[in-house]
Image (tube, rainbow, N blue to C red; front, side, top):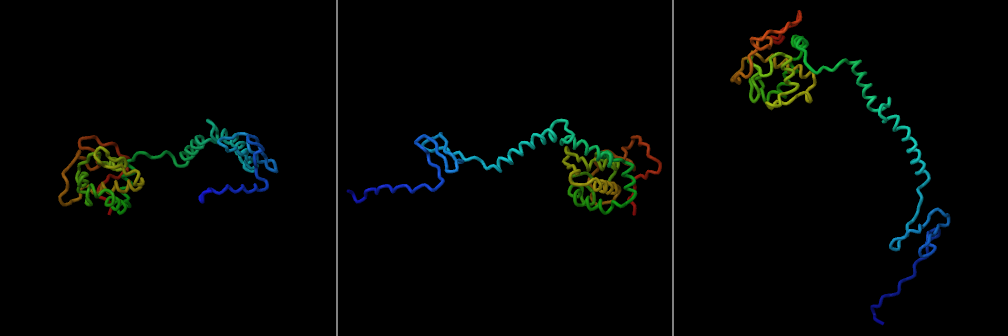
Length: 239
């Protein structure tokens, strides 16, 4: 016999108590308790083992299915009083009742009254320097953007026009909309500050652009809209 002969294979150790063994080459076997079972299905010498899920797991699953049969129609069925769409409509109606319609535009009279109060000066200047100066210069004399100190405006010279231009921007000219970055009160303050720059004497201002406007911001030659009694006209900011 060769010195390198393969030794015989040792016998397999005995199976532990309660283990499953097939009853025959293609048959089925059971544990002592009778719960775990080797199925008759066999592939490549491997038998399929049937191990039922725990009762507590199946119980949770069945309860979840039962709850979903009630929850889905109650919460998500079209027209349900508790559905997401119905709740959204109800919340919108409640907000409209409590706060009134959302203001999407700018009221000239309201802006004039705010301008006359003068509380916007410090806040408006800070916002202008931080957000507007790169295009209009710190003194408002104009750089990439137009000069804010003369009597010419590209998009209207009334306070409401200025606030709307800041809010919506002018994408075609490269001016961003600031409505996502500034709150409504901040836009109102900086619009008043921009109006206060008109008539300021500065060094080397940019040339006029747009239409010349009168003291109230209306284009010259255009009839002025009637003003409510006591409505102040923008002029020099309060001191």
